[in-house]
Image (cartoon, rainbow, N blue to C red; front, side, top):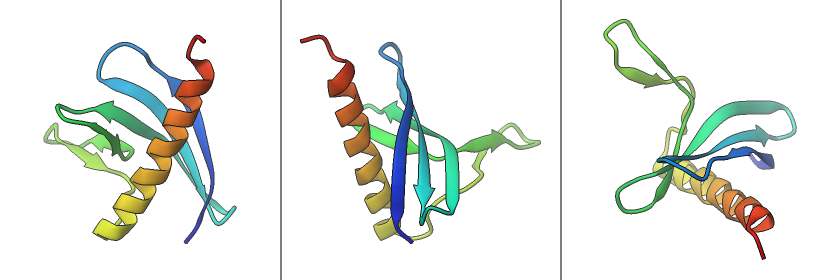
Length: 90
């Protein structure tokens, strides 16, 4: 499965939530509402989730392998940084 498009839908300068991303795979399958979040040590990617009956958040969609997660996260963060540099004041 190949990432064919990444759209940075929103950049949020304040708070821990830094951006909202959509990713398209193989020009055929889109995942919306992926979040870029500022963690204690670094930015990370949080997959779309919803709250279950017990109040815990559960991912709706997520990579299965570590390799897939690292590849997706790397490409999303690269796109986020590019978009951030385009809106940053010169």
